[in-house]
Image: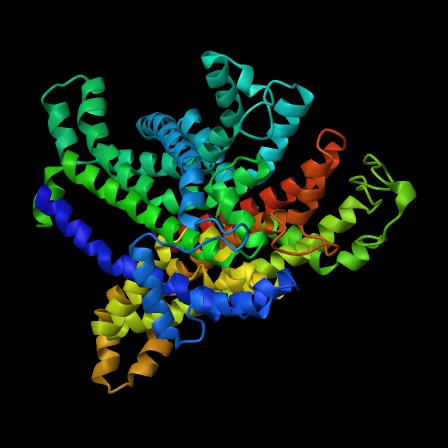
Length: 325
Length: 270
């Protein structure tokens, strides 16, 4: 197992290098140097400030030197300082990241808890009324613009019925609440974003679960299990489900970039102080170093997600652990 | 062709897509209003015989704006997917046909691109460009070619070993001829499926970008930026929130049904 993990970690290195390379060039190939942007935002940028920026980003040196210097700095987690308030970028991201991770991890668990049973029932009762309505739900789920659904639910639950708060993370009088009221308040503010974020992944994952389960039920070991005279519930839950659920772990890992990308939309709509909104603000203000850092860290989180999925897959399935060594 | 239209999904999908296409193409004939003309005294009218889907805060006819918005969304969808498919077909067939280091390089590049949350990549690029319809199309195209590349590569890998391709080689055909005349035309089915599904996905991305204010810029109507205005009047005018969303939902649904239907017709799973 240790060997498997080490091997996978080493395999990440070229990907990490590629991620930094693409992030660097995406931003450098765009027209508009950071110094120009700074100037266009603030006409009073003095020559001195410009010089300092030039030095900071080595913009007077050849592009490969710039890249290597930048790489050397980000290895030490030094992503520079924000153009807006001069604070270290990594500090700002570190403060915003927990909320985004919390929302995404919770919604991933929600997806898993809902999609697996839905997929299993669809597969076991293939072509039943339930399965057919699930198919329709999946088609609608795939086509649903979730930011629109967010607006509809804000309108219905927040404005019309007034049962949920629609913006921000905390109520105004949050400071005066006791512990339980605080938890309850946070939960109320996060309920819609989490549910919506889960909805966007639900259709796909429940579909995968159905396919995976249908295939598992066709496997020879299922015939064996039935031939042994095992009750159907054991055949389904013990033999088929255990095998069918494995690929879903990988698929969930693959859905990480989509979820992180989606947090830009949800955090902006609901005014939540997470990394997605931080990135959105950086884009609106063209905060150069913040955008670069967010791109790298966003991709980095995806890699970690995939790695965790791989490791847990290998942990539960010895076939993977040994065949890849 | 007959076989294609015997599939239920294809028919339903095609009807929806065709309807939106007609609206988009004949926008000027269908409606008598101007999508950007401001008529202050008609602000926030509920749906009526005059204004089928009501009016917005500036008194503009919502139906008219939806119809003109269809033009924007569909053209962004088609052109972005065109770009992505072109890149995907070229890179995928090079990787699949020549194998070796070229293949490894291209596929690693795909792996790396797939690590990025697409929305982050899109926003990062758009931050440094002017958000215009033209730029949106290109940027969406440039960030969504990875799936097609993998698909084409896999198709070509399996086609390459088939007898008719081996025969072509034996007859002395050049690599270019084999790729262009035989391999690519024979993988057209899966490409068509993924392109159809891709149009829906691109429309969703465009509307999300426009909703965030980084896509199609007002006053040009797009389904996404119409919803920005809806957010500002939440709880006041339901028609501003409901109709643009329904348009997005049904357009994407149409393309997805069409795509899934074509997948069934071509008997290809992937």
